Image (cartoon, rainbow, N blue to C red; front, side, top):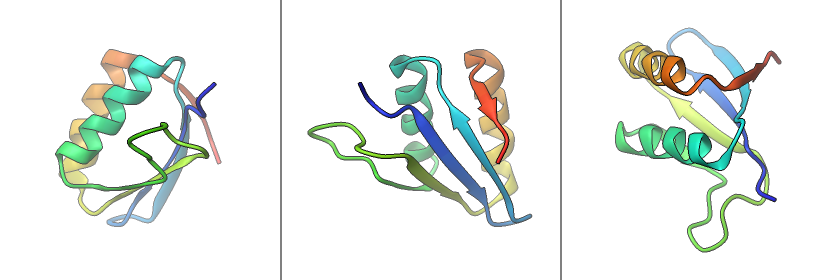
Length: 81
């Protein structure tokens, strides 16, 4: 089973959060979203999926605002860190 956890760091305000996705569909949607908006996504391997938690580095608030809209539509389980 894939690790469905992401550590997201927002550089603008220094906020770090951990999200555990409820299923691979939501996890993949979030990964595509961050890759599509130019966030730095590490720990993803194209041939095998992630082998550990994924780290996402977001450099501006606009990307996080757009991600908030995605969160509302996907409803993940959020684990504070």
